[in-house]
Amino acid sequence: MLSFNVRRTYPATSSRLEVKSMVLDISEVAKRSGYPASTLRYYEEKGLISSVGRRGLRRLFEAQVLETLDAISLARWAGFSLDDIRDWMTPDGQIQVKRAELTQRAEEIEVHAKRLMSLAQMVRHTAHCPERDHFSCPEFQRMLRAARRHKPGQKNVRQEIDP
Image (cartoon, rainbow, N blue to C red; front, side):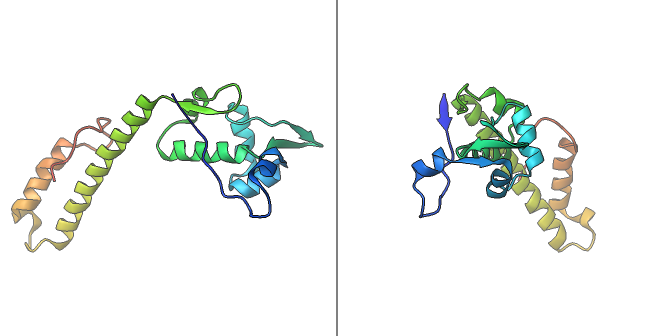
């Protein structure tokens, strides 16, 4: 298993140890992380982050929640669901994922990127095709055949469009 925390840059006036031991209220976490307070409350409800208490009606979080939120953001960007991420949480709030899951996701992203690059080339050719009638262009005909193999909404991400 791989355990990770995304490291964040802190102001030069405070050491990392001081920042880690700080307790921030929900509005400060929202300000520093860019997440709205409603998302922070939802993430807490889903078991992704934990508050350490309250000051009045405001939830309090240890400053390391900012790193956890960065890691959640990275995992979401990679296409993992909140439920996937919650399953990776350890009791002490660390995120642990299986390397095989990351490898599989990287491969899926690469396949998707190749498909998008092929699609961009096809659209570019269509936009700049020298033929007056696209349907007379052999390259456009080849692209139509490729499109026939790929239907919109199709779930099989492994099927590539021939470049």
